[in-house]
Length: 226
Image 1 (cartoon, rainbow, N blue to C red):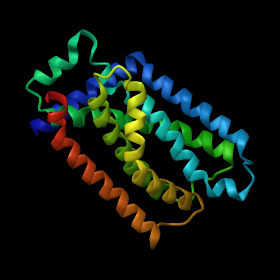
Image 2: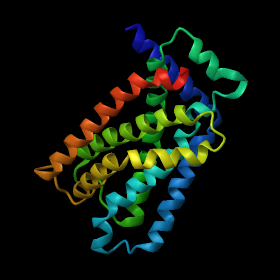
Image 3: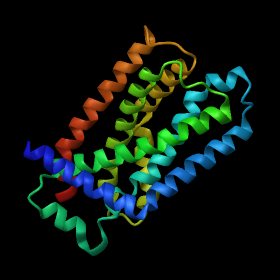
């Protein structure tokens, strides 16, 4: 119980800090909306092909916007040596990591919720066909993005070119997660409930989240303390 309180304390601190300044949130949301607008000029929203690749377009936007948001996760703690204080505090490194991951997850979900209706208007996509399954995919895939992104944010926090290194490290690791999310989202937009091969993608998404969450929680102390 105390461990969960520590996780939520760190998450609440990060949420308050970001909502007070809105630096990363505004940048990520603005970037996502601009990319959605630019993509809408490149594809015909009335074409069937556009609806077939809608899942891919959407998750590419979320991955790009997520990198901007996640890059600030540990970087904001560098000022006044706040990161050193957090690392040496009684809070376990795993609780610190999970708290930051939960905060990033909630912030990225907020960006996605704003982008979904905009994407539906620009690309003539109906999101109401399988809303429950779509919510499950959003929650699972967004957790996969944030857990990997937060881990590599901790790994690159002291690098001079962390804004460049973070996407280079994160995107290759996210390929299985993004592939599963793209396949599932495209099928759900078409009104198809997950069956057969789609259930295999869903299981892969769940497995991805479990494996990389466990690995990150195990290795984060080494990453932060050395």
